[in-house]
Length: 144
Image 1 (cartoon, rainbow, N blue to C red):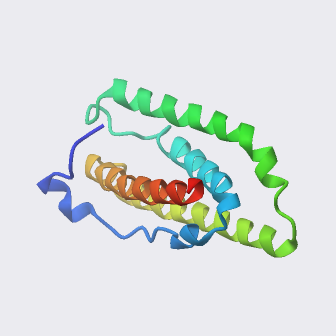
Image 2: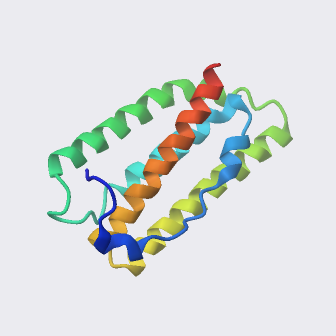
């Protein structure tokens, strides 16, 4: 959707406080957390995007890709949810999902405060690049 953060947008960056506890979730819950994360990304990128700043075709392609991933993960979720064997594991899962939702609330508040400006969206886009790196590591650990 864009390249690197432009000079004009450098002052729009902020620390969204990525919920690092995601990286400590037991491997059997990685799919559930990824699903929650993708749901939140899909919702965020379905509203108030900067008009004319990004290539519309790429945005739609991105949204369609996220939607397909969500559908794929939904097939796995019934199996994942049945793995929550005890209340402690269920609590960890709920706590982590809550952290993800709070993270996205911070991002949404930032966008609202900046009136969904192009630079605020660029800051969010750069944040999600970092998130993809973290999730890539999670899945590499999950499959190895």
